[in-house]
Length: 613
Image 1 (cartoon, helix red, strand yellow):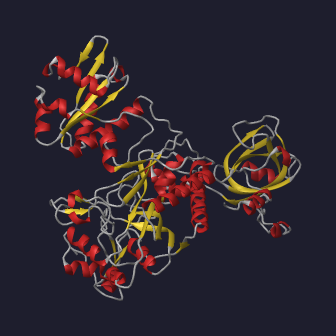
Image 2 (cartoon, helix red, strand yellow; image 1 turned 45 degrees about the vertical axis):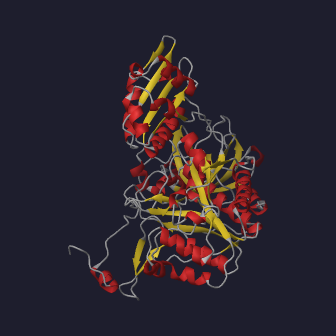
Image 3 (spheres, one colour; image 1 turned 60 degrees about the vertical axis):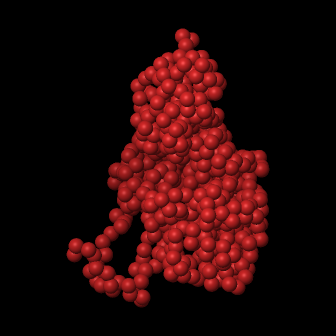
């Protein structure tokens, strides 16, 4: 368990360490002995010294009231006319975001504020120091500022003053603290791996760093510490972990950034169950430490095929039903050509039944859903409403009474329900219905936002098709094939499964890993299966294969997306809300203006020439 005793003593001391309490106030600085969010009725009569930002200031008759804020909260300060003239005059000058120090006596408030943790007390000021004046800020420093994200990111140092953002940063810190405690207590050693590495194919574009010393050569920033942590297993480290910075040059979205953080780990002499057991212990520990929530283990497990068949996704949200129904056998012989042709061409007809959807969805709503599924590759959306008056659907005329009864029976539809169906190749059908499941659940309020549904997805395919029709590794090329399928690695690679596992929380993958290949010959076969030549294998992975010559233990591991995990535990919608200084959708830092241009001298040193210059 994490030892919080020292931090609690620090908090009770008001933010000062004991040896500092005896020091006299420094010139021009009121030395804090308490944070703004800490005063309570039990502190009545105490001398209090606070530092912080002015949230707002207002004068009522002969009194000036000031709300003083720091990362712990807000407390009311009162200045009265019994103060020395210069102190009262300084209080009159206070404006929003001035940085000040205040010394005074804690007393009970006459008009209490139940919205504040400190709402039973106020500080009657005796001394005031203005450390820094502030111009009118371009954004309000409050959680309900309703300002655009672009402006928030441009003035991130102001945005981070908000209580919500301070909470997010502090919570992220607590997650990191709990992570280090758990893995350290379970025999893991924290090891840093290099940030400047050799460019290797790991699924996304590398960020390249030109070398000045080795002119014409480039480092890459790591997409993950994958090969180094495998080398650590070869080194005998046995159990490794790292809170690692990673970099991927890819298109951005709400849960993706060009630089992000992984909780990375690797273990020797393990199988899938060994890794899963340690991770379930970690998640159980983490949620108890950070949210005081008990989660039940072991977590449910779904195979990849079952997850896709039931939910249309390999990261399903299981907080609600709306499971997919395959009606291809019924559709194969029906009179609706869109359905029958799709099945004949090797596709499928699948759908979901939305309880109460007949009244909840207008024709205009369904038209919007039709447009949405087209974004996922589907050609259209078929629908059936079952009402007290019977079936209502533009496709009903193509079905016999028997076929329609069979269709309704397959979905177990009742009066008031809405059936939504997609007919196409498998990938488009699954992606579309996954989108429809989520949209319908939100619209009908089927999602319990207070739940944390964890599950494992296992049995992934080892390969997936690339754009050229060949095969690429679904996870990465170091993933161990299921031993039962290794014999088909060359003859039927599409049928080979992987010893891989993803941990899913509420419809989002928070971690993924696998048992790794530790046999040099098998690793070479894997590289060949994804189309790498002998020269490419030697050039890109020669150092790893060299290590395999000298004895490598069976090993496996997993990596969590720290930013994504924190986002979900906090209930935020974007990982940008969990990062201090994230990039925007154009991969730019609005605060500093990065990326910037290099000077001609810098380019010359690196032996680089920009095209078009």
